[in-house]
Length: 151
View 1 (cartoon, rainbow, N blue to C red):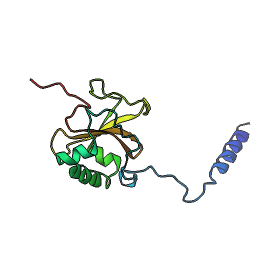
View 2: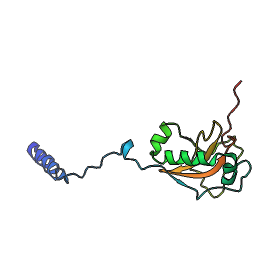
View 3: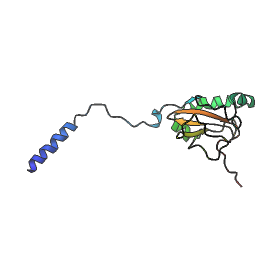
């Protein structure tokens, strides 16, 4: 009886040994991830103010800084952009925002900002799906995610 058990065990193993050569899927590493791309598909002009238009940013001298920042970030993957501090992910829509969640955007997206555009306050708020950053608001006054003032 014991020898019959051994024969069955080895028979199963032989079937499993038929692996296809070079078919192993490797885990993607940071350098293999796709680069960040940007979309204006969800840009919301209905909340101006507190947000601004691209024309406003051009008038304030921020638009060229934004374009330079987008160009630089687009050379990074999402992990690099977050780790280097260019993008900050909040997850859900901030509860203490001067903006309201646009109805055309799903409630479960990961909200984030591109930070420090021509100074400490300038932000671009949006959401991230995979490697795409969807720009939703231009926020020159840092009103998307308001912080409590330090004493």
